[in-house]
Amino acid sequence: MKYGIVIFPSKKLQDKVNSYRKRYDPHYALIPPHLTVKNAFEASDEEIQDITRELEVISTQVEPFSLKVLKVSSFSPVNNVIYLKVDPNEELQKLHNALHSGYFAGEPEYAFVPHITIGQKLSSDEHSDVYGQLRMLKMDHEEQIDRIHLLYQLENGSWTVYETFRLGKEN
Image (spheres, rainbow, N blue to C red):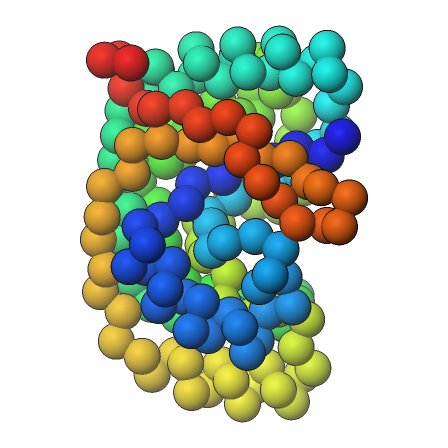
C-alpha cells in the first residue's frame, strides 16, 4: 500500500487554498491542502507497524512550530506547479531530516522546499497566466502546527488519514 506523511494547515488556510485548487489542481478531490514532509512510499502491513512506532518517537523529538506562509511562488520552469511558499524553520527542517534518516534513511527525490500546492499540471500558457495573477496576492498567514499525519492511498487515488501524531515531548 502507498503511504505519505503530511501536515494539514488550519481549516481557514485550507479554505483559502481550496478556493484556488478547485480551479487549478486536478488533485483537488483526492487530498486536502497539505504540506508534504515525506513523499509517497510503499509499505506492507508489517512494515507500517514499525513505521508508526518510529513516527511516535520522531513526533516526541520535534516541538510544535509556527507555519508562516509568505507568498505565492512557482517551480517553473522545472514544472508548472504554483504553490504557497512556507517559511522554512528549524523544527520543520528537523522533522523533514528525521523522516529521511535512521529508519527512513534515503535521499528525498527533490530538495525540501516547504510549500502547499495551489495549482499543478497546467499548460505553460495557463501557468504563466494564473501565476501572473496569483503572485500579486498578499499572503501573510501564520499558525501553530502541533501534529503530523500518516496517510494512505485508497484504490480510487484519494488519500485518507491512517494515524495522527502530536508533536512535542508532552505527548
